Image (cartoon, rainbow, N blue to C red; front, side):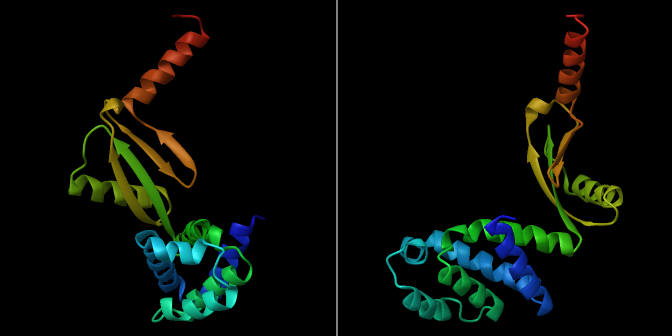
Length: 179
């Protein structure tokens, strides 16, 4: 198991025991966003020039108002010199939280922009197909698809686009030496 998975799963278990899964996710998102927004803060947290004790004390102030689990987790990363994996841990932790809460992210790419009604119907249908899980829908537009849609979720891809069908037909014809 990778260090990212180990840290993410440990954080997940700690937050779950305290019933703070979503709050910790939000806290870490805010913290990472602050690191991106402030060059000085990013250098402070990711840079190796600040002594560990000083960094730990500063984290108390920087995470004031956040869940104790968040602060403790960030301190553990500092203690172990693993600050650089924070964003990867956050991504893995977010996936664990969504999975635990029965949520799944589905990225849908269509040839034209979907109306709100079409998005709602699509979310409802996907919820049925994916066994009642809560769908977090992200939509994109790619006119090259001609029509239909391409779905990506849970590391899978389903291509129901006209372009995808045409490419599949072309490959099949090439295999049979029709073209």
